[in-house]
Image (cartoon, rainbow, N blue to C red; front, top):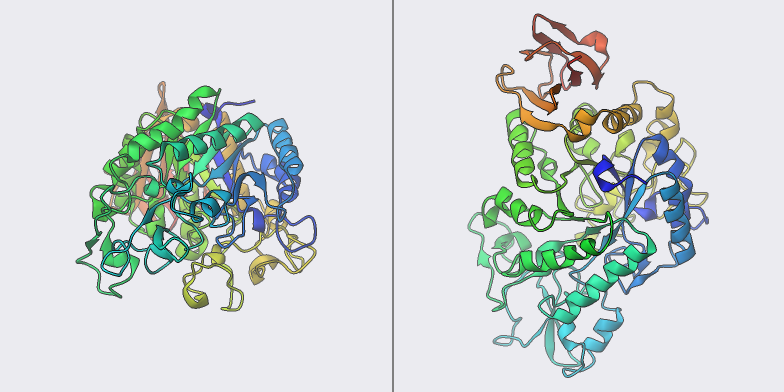
Length: 528
């Protein structure tokens, strides 16, 4: 079995939407197992599965009622064990989600905690008296409104940074931290290879519960989340300490990995200083690079972002990511050509490249109506803001339900599945799918693309060309991306062979250290 040091890709699977094998319109664990051969063919060497634990599903699994059992929606523990065995037989590592900052309000811990003020588990959660007949402070929930919910039974407010059905755990309680480490041990003992750790910014809060500061740059509803600078409700004084304590569980095992979900907040200072706080926690703990989500299409700025992140991640494994279950699909955000170029870049940076299911074929946001929306974070069933748009069923073929299910799926299949699907793209040599497959194979077989250092290529020309150099023991490779919509000519440092590109090589010319590539073209060169 390869180690995490050998892994070059992480494929995120949203299990509700990957493959339904029992005909209820919802994806399941057996569906993932069935498609592991496809992922092996694609040259994926690790997968991350979004939550499948017992849950009332008010946040589709991120509201966990039992961290050690599997929701019947997705199958049984035996199904997960079969998935794990087949993945390992195919030399694919398995990472699952850990949701450490909150539980479901149906979790037995919370049921006990809310039962009385003197219950032994009262301090597992954050309870406070009101202030002047109002909430304890002005903290806002990411789902809208106050972060505090009044509970009539005991006459106090409990904190929820997300939905009111997701009460925040009290990480200042050492018993809570011990519980969470034991949950990690349970899954590691079962054979799971790693944990993606959800929403870590809430792991420590201001112990004095002071009000968040008003955001002077915000001009919308004064009660909105964005109306405040979140300088007290998250990333408190024990932030790094608690993360280090959690990550230390990896030291008890051979070859386990954690990767944290972390979105730096530019209102709290330099974002790469914030990244450094996470990326120096533990050698086996990392954080996703998610700066592509800003849709900033500018060569030099992207270069700087990559370089700054890699400097912050110098002591751990970088994880580069262009999409996930909470972000609009990259093809919808940037368009087909630009998303193809960014995919090539994402697959050629150091460390581990993350691929969200369906992005390898260019899946677009779903075409949903207000009646289709099931995401509770969508205000008034807003189609525009719904995360359901990027969670529609995987498009395997051009049949009625795209090969996802024999029944009507939980979300409608995108109508473009008749053209954008795995079966079609497998047989098209120039498809996005086959570009992913080729680049992932190159990453696995060429040490320079797996372990080579990265530096910026300066003076490539007029500012439209992003240039990166990979180097390992005297070997050199170059990556160039044209951020303009028209062909561009630029200088290259030395003669090299084109190994892969987003466009036909017939459209690319190179002579006398000058290269010309089409608009939105990406190219990989290796010095022979």
